[in-house]
Length: 80
Image (cartoon, rainbow, N blue to C red; front, top):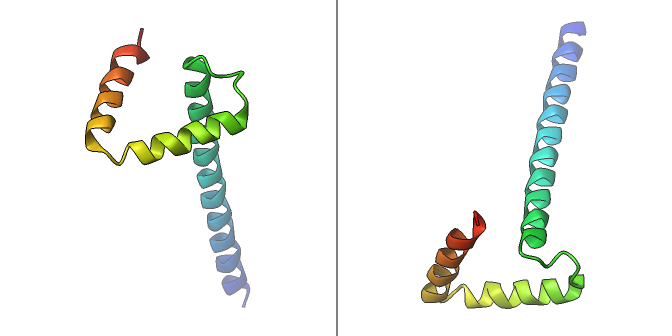
């Protein structure tokens, strides 16, 4: 019985570590996205305007030409 409990504790600890790693990865991703907003000079823009703009952008990205144009522009300006 003791071995079974020890194995259960190990499985629970492994699950907790995996969940923590997932949360950290998600947090880092969100921080990076926020950094892009600031880098684009939009850090002081109202969040509802940003969200509306991003929703609009998501719809426009369904057009492959728009996606490629914006990708080229991002590549050109990201490192400048």
